[in-house]
Picture 1 (cartoon, chains in turn brown, green):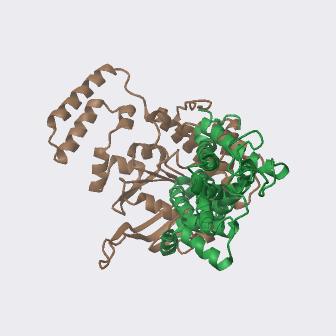
Picture 2 (cartoon, one colour; picture 1 turned 135 degrees about the vertical axis):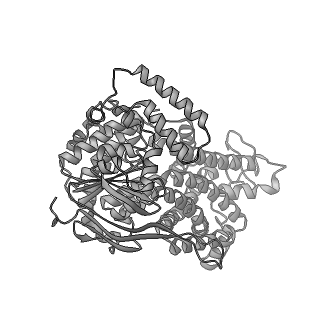
Picture 3 (cartoon, one colour; picture 1 turned 30 degrees about the horizontal axis):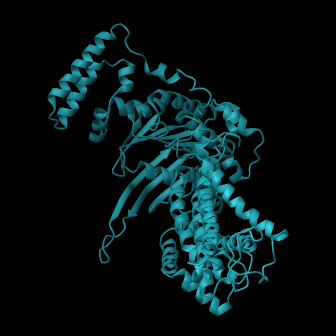
Length: 330
Length: 272
């Protein structure tokens, strides 16, 4: 990444305020500051993670980046072109460059449309001829081509996210934005969908913006991570920096409070984990010492059971591709 | 779609509606007698000559029932057609317009909703002359708010879904979203509303005919028959029972059919 390169996404002093409905006729409506003064550059080819708890403004920020919402103030440029002052109607060019994968595998596909039509939507909207693209995309995301004539409810959550990815890839975007793409999925399916996103980002040379409240998931996918809290970005850094040496108190707190499935799998012992949880809870003034102690014991037992195995390295999880349930349900 | 489930209400409702449609169609090619005063005894009970008897003006009841089926269908189609063709787009517009404009539409809707349907029909009849069509257009207009409301509530749910956001990201404008996503996803609601409104329109026609503002005298209508029978109810109850049953069959048929169709059209239930 050279310094002179135009950033894929550039945010300058972005603010977004929402007005609450007034509660009385005379009162002034309350203003909620969802995003405060966010400035950020995301370089082409970067895999950028955005983490924060719910209500931290990450979804609002994402909507603005995707041109679904406009900032109250500040500037947003996608590949050098401004989108902050454009009405949705004037953003058609953006749709070929930036596409989204949504959180809810149930709600992001129209239940009344066949998969073929769903994937073809960006093509239809852009006036791009369909050709054989639907089948190619289905194969690309690991689905069989006869999925095309089916309806969304005939697929599992994981399969629906694959379809979502196929739709996002249809107009050959440069930037893929994923809004909590695996948080609604069963843990067993998450790795598969993460792998898929991983693969297509590599294969299509995409810039990735990945939003999640789950730090372990972001760690697997992203090179650089920003932590959001109450509408502000409190810390930005490479994934390694942020996870190994968090600077901001909130980041530290966040890291401490997350159940470390990934680390447990990556080799951290359960006893260590429990100890860390105990420390975190003690730090936040938790009273339930007994529970924590029980947890630690359980951890120690689990360690004894897994002795010699040493856990599975995270890398393996990431590239160990299971086939999705295979076939359709129903 | 082979996997779609044919359900009982759909079949029963469909058959009842079909029965009304067949009666209407048959009336175009054949009726037992002409629809006029016959040189026969009045108020005959059902017999071999007159299968459903004769009324107090010595007209054949079966003839009236067959011809009345036409009026019934016509009445429902006009009223529901007017209401749905205006109400559904208004509801979608209200749901998709941000802020004040959508609110304004719905307040206008509330005003219309507060206006009694029959009063509107009477006003229309006074202004534009009587007749079934005018009366039913008025009933249709009075039914617009029902369609607008139900459509808006459905559309609000649809436009907040991620698939609509996805469609926006795909590059579709509001018109395309309304057509491709909102409309197909509110059809179920609209169909159910239509079946209810169809029944209401049939009853409204009967009420208006009584006031002399609906179907004019000398034109066959189940509602008219019912009202003409009221003075002889104790003497010849079949004159009330027969058109009453016909109305019940039509109303029940449309309600069941609407219910069954909603389930049938829902792809989520497919193949279960």
